[in-house]
Length: 618
Image (cartoon, rainbow, N blue to C red; front, top):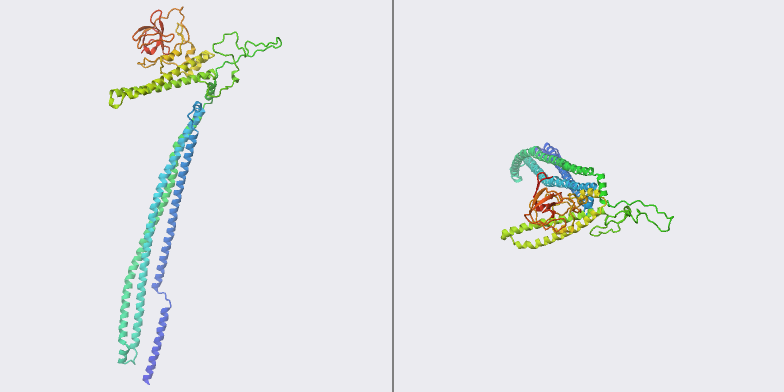
């Protein structure tokens, strides 16, 4: 009875133990939040927050780089605008620059035209300053920002790479820690089950020794011990790795990540500072050229203030002055008498009749109303122009020819020196190689001198026909030149003029010709003579001869083909009776019957101390 009762209790105990195991299994299946699990949840939240911060920083820094690229593009486009603007200004200035023709040369004598040309030149310099702005914007901002952008992108990439690497490492460590924890937990549960199973078998009082061997009680004991050992090892591993993870986590959140965030912050501050410096340079580039731009504008203002309306209007008067005499009054014609039409002495058809007409002058005309029918280039002697205009044209032509003669003579002198060098140093060149060019230059000079002779003849004709000698003298002062160029004897022959009166006076018309002053080089070329002769007055043989005022010695022979001149031989001694009055001629006497003019540059003059203007000409 007792045995059955004990067996009944055993069955009850077994049922209770099975129920307890089921309850424990159900408890294991239900989620329970242990302190460790709560810690892991907190850690997961931190990791998520850290990842979110990296994403936010990555977006912000990328936007900062895009802003730098946008500003750099803005600077580039501004530079292109400055270049295009400067190009357009230069083209505009070039378009309105004076052309190389006679019309532009005539315009340049007016002050308002010169002011406009100055404005164009200043505008060209103004365009150059805009080119400087474009160049400085490109070199000081665009190029530097382009290089900085590459560095900024590389630095940003490095910082985020380090951050992701640190984040991946701490996540990997956390996964290993969780694995150790789960292994330790599993081993503990296995050890508990093995221990319970062993205790259950050991508590059965009905189990005989044979049943113990048969049912593996010893094996259950060994299994429980082994499970306890495994749980103990797992606990040690878990404890050790937990300590390591805590250290790594501390370093991660207190050292590594803060350092990376600080580097990103420094990078962002440098980017903002760099943008500010570029914006300041953007303004300074314009400020640097302001002084020069101001000078350009001052130059334009000065040019505008230099305009002289009265002077310009007087230039027009001088340019278009005709030189014609005003027409005489129109007389009343009485048709009540004879049917035959009579004409007044001062009428247009018979002007100033009864008075001696100057040679070459036509009857008076209503010159203010006459139009030039010849609108082409006109004849070579400009005979289609009014007297004053013709005189100016002829004088200008003579000046141009004299300049051409100067150039040819300069070339001749240079080639002559070259030939002398070749003669002294044959290894440098053949002396005969320059002879063809010298011959060509000599022919050119001869042609130009012939042209000068021709135009001087026409000029003399115009000056003889000018209406008023006083006006002619006044106008000649505007165009008188002091040319040192000498022409050949043939030039002087074409402009033959009688000598002045015995008293040494000259007519005022002589002043309209080109004057050659007495300041000629000490060693003149004996093949050249002055270009002018004394005036158109003849000697009066009835007057007493002029008194001697000094002596002279001929330095070169002079043939004296022109009327009023006298031939002299080299070294000949003569008496000076009239000194050079600025026309390049000195009046000398050989004896009581022979006297005339010789070029001042051909003689050495020694005036007496008491003579007027006493000096020595060499």
